[in-house]
Structure formats: C-alpha cells, structure tokens
Image 1: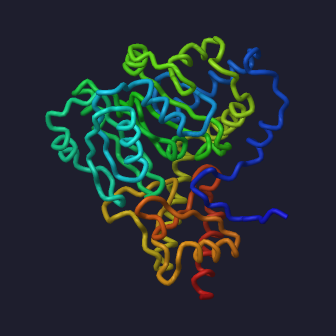
Image 2: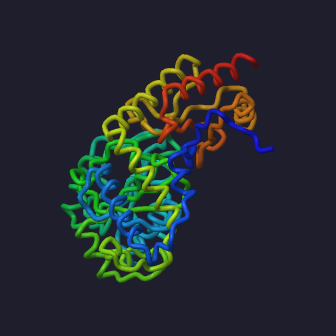
Image 3: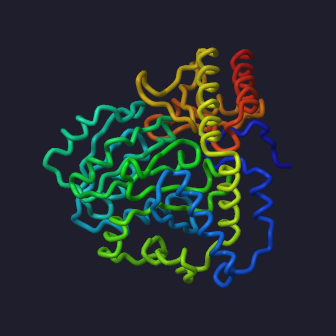
Length: 363
C-alpha cells in the first residue's frame, strides 16, 4: 500500500488539488484539431500574464519547467554572444552554465547562496565595459529559500541593449513579479509549483524585443519558441499538444484568479511568516542571511544538530510531514518546506510545525 503523507510540504511538485485532478480526468478531443483547445490556450496565457504583471505574449509548451529555460536560451543566444548572470544560488549558477554550454561568453556576479541582490552598484561594477546580449537572474532560488528583487536589473539590461531573462518557476502565481515594470523580456515558469498542477507544462512571457531576437536567431528544435508565436491565433501547434496538461494548468490559473491574486500573494506571505516564526520558536536556524529577502513560497532552514539529512527526513515522514533536502553546497545541511500553491495554508503549516516540534522533542 502506498504510504500517505498528510502534511505535504515539498517545494514542488506540489500536492495536486481536486479541481485540477478533475480537469485531467476529462476525455478531451485532440488539441491539434479542437477549437476549444486554442480558446483555453489563449485564456490560460492571459491569466498567466495577469499574474506576472505583464502584457507580453505567453507561450505554453509541453514539458517540465527546464524546457522553458532551454527554450529561452537556445532561441535567443548563439555561440560567441555575451551573457551576464546574477548568481545567488544553485539555479542562477545553472542558468550561467547553460549559457556557457551554448558557447556564450559568461560573466557572473556571485553572491553567497544565502544572500539576495541588493545594491545594484555591485552589478554595475561587475558588468563594467562588458556588453551583454542577455542578463539572467532567478527570482526565487528554491534551494536557498530566497527571493531576488528584480527592480533595476531590467533597466541595466536595457541600457546595454540586452534582453532580461528571469527564472520565475517557483514564484509565478505565488508572489508579485511585476515583470512589465521590471523590464523582463523572458519570464520562465512551470506548472508544478504555485499552480497546483503536475510537472507537465512550461510557459514563457515573451517581449517584442525578445521576439525580434528569436526571429534573427532562427533556432529550430523541440524547445524552440519561434514555432509557438502564432498558436494563440488558432494556428496549429508545432507538435501534438498535451491537452490534459493544458487543462490542469488552466484549472490552476482559474483557481488563483477566482481567489484573487492579491489574496493569493497575501496567503503565501502569511504562510511564509508563520513558517519562519515557528522554526525560530523551535530554535531551528533559518538559512537566508540577515538582510536578505526570504521567499514567500519556500523556507530553507539548517538541519538540527545531531541529525543527518536522511535521519531528519525519516523522522519527519514518520510524523506525516513530507519535506525536502536541498542542493549544491546546501546538500546535507539544509532542509526545506514548500508553502506554495494549495500548500500555502495556515492549518497545514500548523500541522507541519507540530510535526517538527514532535520530531525534536522525542529525541
């Protein structure tokens, strides 16, 4: 029998609620030939844009969130181009590595993995006379439980004629992004975090300057963005679309809009504050440094002294709490609670904190 974890707190994929599961149980006709598919595609894209604070086009593709990252980079870069990467964690480093792997010249601004972007003078000093074709950043560094402010980075990119590319997989739908005001040209997202859906769909908000670059590069491949530009007009998809995946994402977006985006953002922030306060009461140290910005969708904390990660994980699972370890230099040192999507819930968080207290008190 499958073991049940009544306190799901993984930082994605999240627990899938009944309305999303119900959308996936429908027997849909092929999206290739169904006009309702294209109507749902457009409606979902508009909802995603609204939640990101942008009026840019939204492309929705079949595949986990990494597809959006590769699609953005391959469609907008070619060997020899220059990329400036603001690195504050594992995924920021990963974006830089991906660009480097495509043959680009990459310059990194590296901060400690428990810090977030602050004074942009550091960014300007590091860029110096480097003329990037793209500037990359991660909004929510999930392994670190941090949230990078985006204000100003877009302006720096525009002043140098660069595209601004932001990984918002773990924040889109759970935190205000204001991508339009921040000058984001490529905003990258995935269905498995704040949208309460399985890890089956990726999506990108694409600006007019980004589309111009995409047309010039002309990249063709499964992850290419260019073939998707006309899909919202009812044109045929470049490959067979995942009808049930779109339906699940559509249900997730509708659920957020029905609750109200500001109410959703407030609910996530409240759950995050409750989590951090509860951990402090238990003398569990938070990972983000003093003065950095903690994420409203995931909290990272140090594994209590005397426990290895497998031991701590198993103690929590025995009490019904499914938490996660971390990655990179935090592996074996940090554990994480994902309060995103439906998991950003006060009652659920209280259960999680109770399980943590019991795990400590019965040593």
